[in-house]
Image: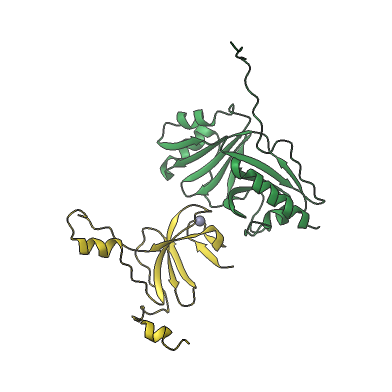
Length: 188
Length: 113
Ligand SMILES: [Zn+2]
């Protein structure tokens, strides 16, 4: 009878090992993260915010960051909360401990993320995304769900030349390829 | 590219992020099991398909995900205004009520050769 190994199988990132090469843009898979899709009523935002130790943003296109946790406004009652680290950041436990009625779904493995950085980062994303990514319209900390070519993404600007692209795992090949294509055209 | 104002995101966004969702302000009958087949057909299947000012539901599906209402001109394809779901039908300043044009095949295509 075959020996059953007790060691855990290693999980491989959807875009493991990939590196974008273009003069003005780097495209790098982000480390695994814990993610929660959170829906809640306006009156419960305060309780959830204190449970998550993070002010859930209530203004469109804004995000809030505290202690390796980031909450992204997606809709009037909807947030994507991202915690660094794999399963250890306690987001689900925090939502459960809030004591309010909410919908918190662990989508850690549904999404994967891509860092797009460099002088041509916005141009590379604009290759497939119609958003105005000027600093005036989309400042550091701005975030939104939007469209990138044929796939839906959640875009977060973490710096003047730095973006986190959250994309469904099975679409990540496509998103990466289109970003790489866009990066080649981003000349600065 | 057509820009559509999302009343929830409070800004103009590309049409690529939106989906059309049919005629707006259609109220579901209260006692839907009691109405006649004709009344049900009127509620469920029949739409006005008006020329000019029309009220539609749209959804910011690749954005905030919300449904909202839009007043749109079906001739020019212009969005005249958008407003949040649940609000009553909003008058559009400077636009009179829809002209009740009935177009027949002969009127529109009769001269086509
Ligand atoms: Zn919106």
